[in-house]
Amino acid sequence: MKEELKDIINRLAERFPEKESALLPALCYLQNRDGYVSEEGMKSVAVILDLPEARVFSTASFYSMLNLKPEGKYIIQICTNVVCTLLTENPLLEYISNSLGIREGEVTPDGLFSIKEVECLGACGYAPAMHINEERYENLTFESVDEIIGSIRKSELI
Image (cartoon, rainbow, N blue to C red; front, side):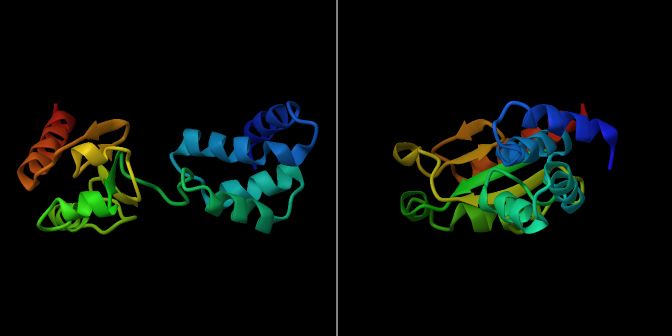
């Protein structure tokens, strides 16, 4: 275990009356640092905060904003709520999965894209919709999805 991680998590723990209260902030720190929360990271947090590993693992797996495996540089969140799904002849999730050659939770071989299914993006009036990282795209067609993904790929080559 790296001393730097221990120091950072101990500083986080000082902000709370109980050390256990630093669990979620510590996991978020790992997520921000590494892009995901690794098993090794969770074990380190358990040791530093003197918590059972099961407590750390269950907390990490409970929060959907924590990624337990590496993800692509561009995370495509696809709304699969009834409104978004009914407004396309073929669900966007299936189309994008086929286009990128990956399923939900996988990463493209170049490390650029991963797909996440989400229940709602709050864009029902503009369905179908998706987010790529923090950018929202609305009124999507298969052609517009191809253009968006193509422009991201192109920008990565520059």
